[in-house]
Image (cartoon, one colour):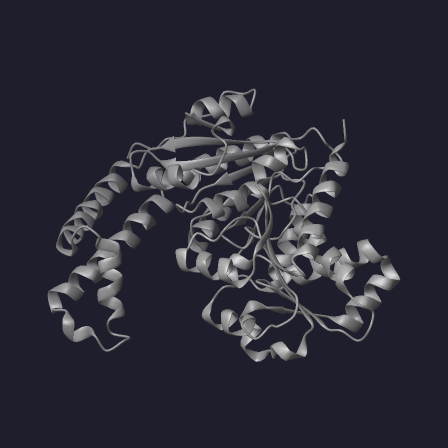
Length: 421
């Protein structure tokens, strides 16, 4: 039987050949850990005629630039790789695309393309006449973005994260869903907000979400005269209730207690844990409750994020708390568990977070990825979770009680965690 690296190389070459057959105007969808960066870099080298051609690589975040530079060096060797990048490659974030001229480049590649399909990016792509290679882990959730990607370039290659597991390209994984209760005070607040949500929804009609968007959007296209003050009040109240409801479940007190308990167990076993909060404020709150944790999110400076990542990797800290910044592109192979404390209904976000735990660990090839999801039972959050898991193999998912999962993680009986006041 082929070993893991052979399977990965075989599939990567299959993807590269598929891109070549499409004359380097193609998209690939490959599960996290597959090696999309290697495929893009190899495709560029396969295409490069050897003259003065310029290559543009677009990424969503600054830290991804170093990953591409490292990959060129791995493929071409340290000296030649560094020279190739210096002479032929420019890397920019999607936010800077409006400053770029498509005619300056002979080959354009886009990483994490689901984040690079904005109006400004599309205006740039439409001017690209040569090779255009785009990659991401799965199709964009947004219907308009999916349409844009499909119309830009043909899909040349596709492989899911579960198929990667089947081929031993990435590590197997499990997702354990742990239902928690709100405190009495939190439950009372949630019930009131949910009541408000239902009231405003009834005012907007069957398709409340789209109607509310249409009403509020009418101010931008001079059509606000079509709607009454009551219509605007309903639309505003509807979205305010959604935000309040999400805020309550995102910031549930029992999530903090559970996160702290998991961190103590993981620390006792000298493990590493990633924690994903629902927003930056709650991520900070979780980090403050866990001794020795570090924070990596968009409100931190590049210097602070790099320091946090280095402290986590070298063992100074056993818990790395993030919100969305870790979702794309960072390899954290030494994490033994991922704890999700804040949810969206997007399957893509779930796949990306799982992807942080499934990369093969060369020091422990038998290690499996473990993801624990904390959600509020019988709330909207439970519905979001079930929707987010719709593209995940059901055999990898279990629904479990908090005390049961803590007992299975630690040999010691944990102290009571759930607050009742």
